[in-house]
Image (cartoon, rainbow, N blue to C red; front, side, top):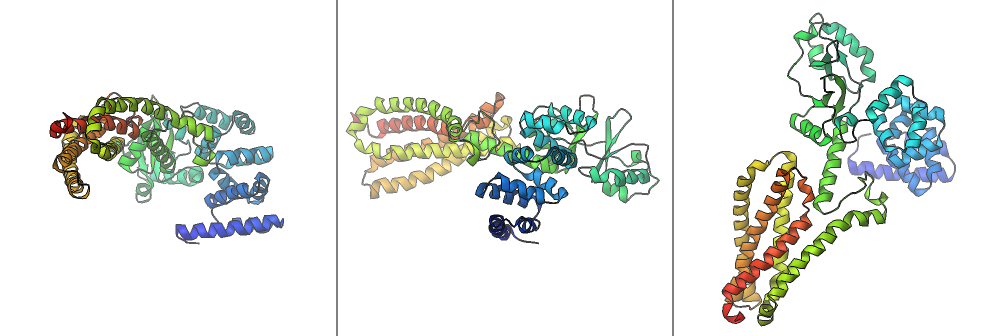
Length: 468
């Protein structure tokens, strides 16, 4: 069935109501028949909703009623918590079947999420040769290319003909992760070239692979960080990349569907860090699944640091307390100026951090960035200052001197905030730290202190007589 996303969501909601009704009446096969109308990813979502609405026992019943091949696909889309519940509820024979049928990379992803006791239970039912390979993959660092790859790829030899190679693809293609790119290796398993399926099917069958393979291929190392691997995918738009070890032997491939998950994880991590959320337990769980206490612990450190930082802001206000008491109207505009400074600084920081993440901006571009943000700050500052001049003079009746104080402060604050927000991420990146760690709240607190200092400096210039 072809539907838009909204139509499909409506169909899933309607199906869930039917399934819950059938389960309540113990008409389990009718509930299964409703499920079978959807693909594996949608079924996993529906079963998760069933678990929330009823309990895990009903989820297990539905899972067992699914055809075996479909059940395996559904299992690969389930959340780690639901997978553990299913494994604990089904028989060892059923576990063994699921493990044997899963794609190797899905198998590794699932085993990495499951508790050690469950992993041991699964590995005990896995053939010895495959168990050895699984253990090898599980020993790669969690965020490395090795933890993402699959050994299920098509390998060719350079002395084979195109005809022999196509026969090899027909024999092993069903179990391979992808057949669109084949990898040529020598007798020592070293990667020496790649050849596309389109090239194979459009070339005469007696041509040797060495004559049509590409030797200027792109690859990644088994210990490369997953974020670097994601950058390679984004740069070259490949569907798959070969992974080699220290001796340039091919040990697996990474496909684009696996890297999409990595890009989502990295983006989530950057967003959290930019907003002062530090995930100490490196949770992959969703917002609703993380306990309240853990949410509090993740958010508290930056807030404590910023609370201390605002002490300096208070000291600045105290320093000019006598001036404020003489021209009380100055207090009225302090929140606006501080807020504007924080917002403009955060805007600049967000764009620069994003630019660094995508490779659009390099640390060596600091002078270009500074010049650009200086001009942007000047334009924005002038416009905001003119608007505020009208507001202070005519709407608030503050007088020309008060208006000049506010407007000149606004102009200087916006320019300085833009420079601070753009330069700090570049400096942090230069010393090999994560720019996202310099959270927007931290930049806002620095901007607040700068804003007050500039504001009171302008007041001392334009309101010197009133403050005397």
